[in-house]
Length: 149
Image (cartoon, rainbow, N blue to C red; front, side, top):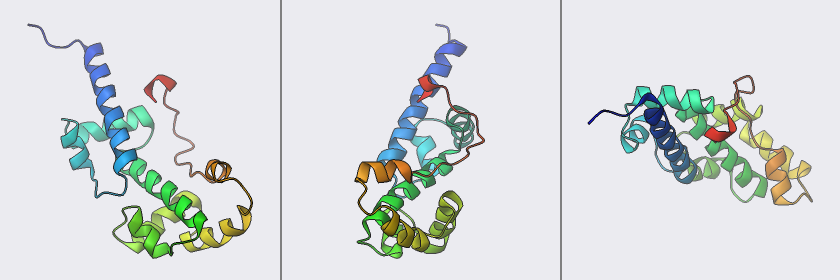
């Protein structure tokens, strides 16, 4: 029996990458790392990282951090939790690392964001506030083809 063709292998890899992305979306608050994600997809961590970046324009770790920051932004908009509580609620293990990543993506510290957004988003529906304040990473990265999303 012959092995998979290159096209069949590429499609199988894309399906596994979608499952990895879906897992990150679902389990962003859990302790995830590239090795665990790769094991779950039956791929080596290097292969997963390369293929994920090629398909989605960023590494699995960057995608995870974007999801965590996006969720943190939503929690901070509600204003009910402190920055430290938000950090741990979204899966951060270090307030310093979380604040650094948040600042890289959003352009300001979590506490500055919390203060600013509480004033700016007052009166906006939650769905509009989420869309307007969504973090965008790697704007210069080529966009993935729609069929990959």
